[in-house]
Length: 584
Picture 1 (cartoon, one colour):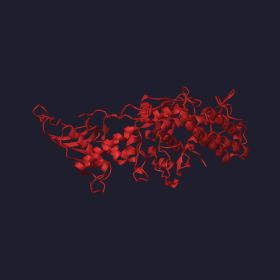
Picture 2 (tube, one colour):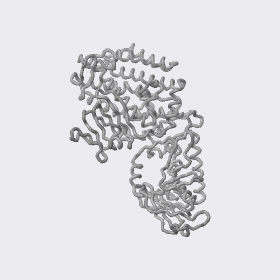
Picture 3 (tube, rainbow, N blue to C red):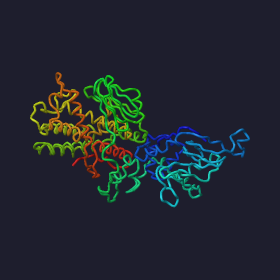
């Protein structure tokens, strides 16, 4: 028996992959067996791919577990296999047992469990598992996954020499105990599931999502699993309608980005809050649970305590120069989904598999540029719209990445040649004569460059969240320090988010000459100008849009995450193609 040893979880890959991971962990956590009995796909996401997300139930469950999660009490050794009582050897002898948070494992059974509470007398013990909620109205008194988890705990105790004939489920909300007898049928089912979860994991194939299941809306991983979305796109000869796709996650994120660009400011930690100070004066306090990521500009410092807490909570820190160039990112420990990154590397380095994904991304970008122009131009030029449509169709037939790059470049020149027609102000400050950068030479290009940097930052944060390596893309080729995948992900969103925000700022009169600095041939935003642009960018990211495939409304920030997760599902073989986002 192992007590207070860390539980380790590894990640397998597909057995036919050249980049497969050596082997699974030897021991299956009892909690994963609970998940497997509930939903095999959920167990695969958590155990094999290392995914996890909180919801109200998981947070409340941890709160209700806070007492039993603290180890206490004593669990004496049972008589050994030769029947020698430890009391004769100077052991503890028969006594009342009341031990909390005990880690038990057995290699022959191939399982491990941290048991909330063990009660008993001498070598006869009973595992007690604390459960969130009330006792369900069932003949057995509890759902199968909970009974299976308790049964495995009992089998582990038996394997370690104790007598264990039943377990107890304690439901915190109703304060009731439910006895679970370890009869032959339950033991047989538990061993069957134990074998099943290992076979599932070694197969390297994620189980299909549940179909129209009432389990999905309450699952904390529903936004990662995307069951209805995956079923809709991968429907094989089945009739699945967009209205059948349920939006089971909030349309907007609860957590929001925090930007600090006041030069000389210091970001520190105070309790469960981030505290921004300057010259000893507190500028703002933000609750850590409400922060999705932190962006700092120029000479802004972060204390070690704040940095460590942000990393512990997997909240990325993004660094920008004073002028707004995105220069780096700090994250906590890398995402555990090694399976996805292995597949990403394999596909990205194989032109035959990378090219179809790149085609879809460029096609989406050109189509969305055309839609934005059609909606916002004073008098949409028929020839330009036709050319953009032709280039979009041509991108679908490109035979190489170089050809695709040429098509995208031609589309960008065509699009920006008419960009001035979408600017509805007579101010000469916003005359636009084509795209330029490094450095931008006019106010419009300065705003576009800054917005693109903000969008790439958001894509990097999303890529890290999903489990990708943001530096290896499928369209943009690897280059030192270049976030190629983040650049790929933003292609279809550049016109819809960045260009749209730029036009809103200018056409609504939110920006003027006072918001820009001109030095020689370069134009940059002032600090107040950057604040205006960031506010417009965040408004746009928070704007609800109807997803053209699924029919539900979600913010652009949420849609960017959905698209990134759909890309991961395509790479892992669940979806036949990457379903590019095209607004109508």
